[in-house]
Length: 180
Image 1: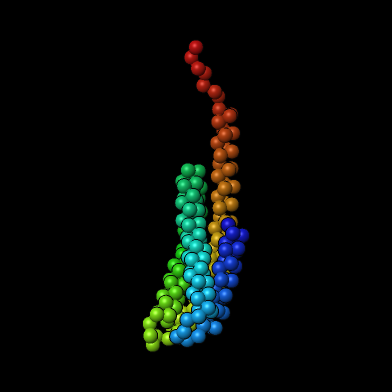
Image 2: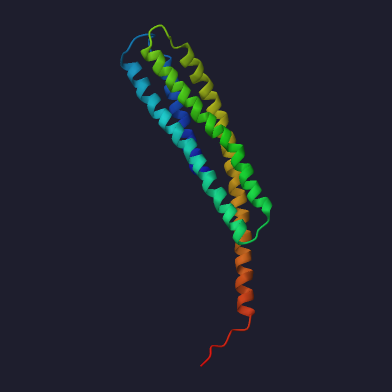
């Protein structure tokens, strides 16, 4: 998962940087080709950002449920489920606020584009904040994903050991004889 996340995060950050850079060349209060390209790249950037954060959200929901189920079935230590929840709690604020920051940036961009006298200052400030926040959020989300992956590996090892012991004890038990 960490490799998939890195590829998605790099692609999204590239889009954010392109959109941010294009914004510098949009004439204030005017349309034009650069404005249209900035608008389209901005929409694509918003979708990509929501997708990346959505993938992280889905990853932690799915793996958290898997750890809870395997912990229950194989009677593994409770700290494993607690660690999965802790990893999820580390990432979720950045997932949520990253989506909200991008939404606010897009909304302020639409306001700057359509409302007379609004200007682009608020959009610029929101875009600057979102760029920095997303960079930090992706770093912290990556850290939580790596922690979750390590936990998943440990859970799998212990579940496999438990399954192996169960099979060995079943093979060593005397077989029940069927009545003729």
